Image (cartoon, rainbow over all chains, first blue to last red; front, side, top):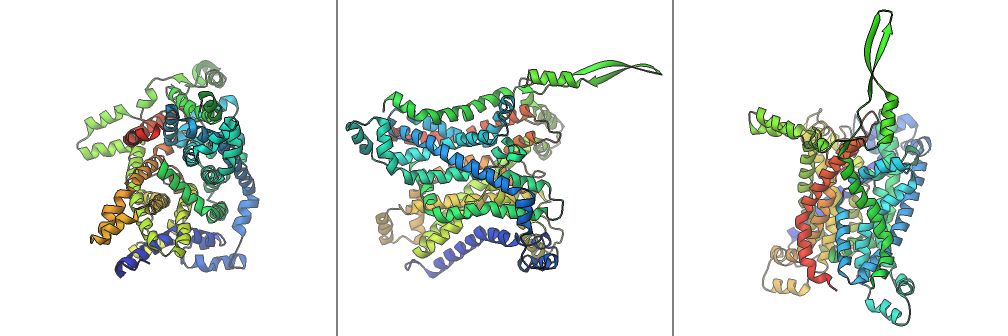
Length: 290
Length: 345
C-alpha cells in the first residue's frame, strides 16, 4: 500500500474495492450454491437463510444438496445437445474467423495504401451495427434459400459479425511486429505469402490467442443471432436457457434453468482463470492503438 | 504491398463482411418498403334450405400462392415507417392537437411502441455510459494502489461481470431480486413493505436494468483505464509531487489528462454496445415496462401467431441504424481528424 498517502484514503479505497468485489462475485457464488437446492429454498418464501442451509431441500430430497436441477436440465431436457452445439459453433467460429482475420489483418497492417484505412473505417462502422438489425436482413433470404436453421449458417454469420473486431485487433498486433522481419525474407527471395507463412506465422501466436479469446466470447455469449437463426433441435446453450424460461410454471423447471445457467458459466470461469493476462492485454491493445 | 497481393490476403475477410453485413443492410432497406400480403378474399354464394347468402371467405390457397410468388409482400412505400408501430406521425399530430398540456402530450407519445423503446434505449445509453466510465476509473485507481500480490485475484474477480453471457448475467441478478430471492427479500425488510416487487414498478425496472448495465460494462472500462494507468509518466507525477500537488491534484491534473484518449475509446465502444441493449430485457422479463429498439425487432419475429413481420422489423432496423449513425458521427469524425496524419505510413 502506498505509504505516502493518508490513512483515510487507504481505508476509503480498500472499502470501495471490497464493495465492488462483493458486487462482482456474490451473484455467481449465490447462484452456484443455490443450484444444488430445490426451488422452495432458492426462492424462499419463509426465510432467506433456507437458501444457504437448504432446509426444504433436506425435507424433499433427504440431503441438503441435490443434483436434481442438473439431471433435469442435462438429461431430461437434453441440455447436453445444446452444449454440444455450442462447442461446435464456438470452435468453428474461432478457427474460421482467426484464419480470415490473420490474413486480412496482416494485409491491412502492411498495405501502406490509403484504402486500407478506409477498410478499417468501414469495419468500425460495421462493428457499430446492432446484431439484431442484421438478423432481420438475413431471415427472409435464408428462408427463401433454405439456409435457415443450420449450424453452418449460424457459424458463417457469427464469423462475419466477428470480422470487424478481429481485423482491428490483428491489424494493430501486426503493426507491432517489425516490418523488417518479413521484408528481409522477401529480399532473400520469398514471395509475400511465403514470408507470411515462414516468418510471421511463428511469431504471431500471442496476438492470435488474444483475438481468439474475444472471438470465443462473442460466439459463446451470443443470443440475438442463435435465438433467431437456429431450429429448436440445433439450439445452442444460451437460446436453450431462454426457452427453459418460457416453461417456468411447472414446479422444478426454474431449477433446471438455474442449473443450466451455472453449467454455461463454468467454461467462462475457466477461461478467465487461464487467460486473464491475455484478456487484459487484448483490451489494452485495442485502446492504446485502436 | 502491391494491390493484387493485398487483395489475395483480404478477400475472404472482405467477402464475409460484404455478404453478411453490407448486403443485409441493403436487404432490410428493401424489405422495409414492403408489407405482408393481405389475405385474398373470395365471395361465394352459400345456398341452403333458407335461400342463398353471399359469404366472404379467405382463400387460403390463393393467399399461399401469392406469398410464394412474391415473398417480399406488396410494395408499401414509407407506409410502414409512418404507421402506429414506428414513427406514427398522424398519432403524434393528433395527440398534439388533443393535448391539454405538454405533459399529457409527452405521455401519449411515450405510449407509442417506437417512442417508448427509443426513450428507454437513449436513457439507458446515456446513463450507463458515463457511470461505467466513472466507476471503471475509480476501480482502476484503487486496484493500482494495491500491493502486487492482490492485483491478480482482484482483476480476476473484476472481470467476471464482463465476460458473463449477457442473458445469463441478467438472469442471475433477476433471480436474486425476485420477490422471494435474496435481494428482493432484503429490500422488503429494509423498506418494511411486504408487497414490494421490483418487477411490478416501471421506474424500479428501469433502475434495475441500468444498474445491471453498469455492473456488466464497468470491468471493461476498468481494464482499459488500469492499463492506461501503467503508462502514466512517472516523472510528471513526481515533479507534481515536488511542486506540492496533493493526491487529488495529481490525479486531476496529471492522470486524468493522460487518460483522456482512453475515455474517447471507451465512450465509442460503450455507445455502440449500450444502444443495442437487448438481452437484459429478455432476461429480466421487463418488456412490460421497458423495451428497446433491438427488442422491438426481436418481438416482430416472435409475435404470437407465428407470422414474422419482416417489413415492420426491417423498418425498425433502419431507424435503429440511423440512430446509431447519429450517435457515433461526432466521435468518428473526431477520431478521423485526429488520426489523419498517423495513418499515412
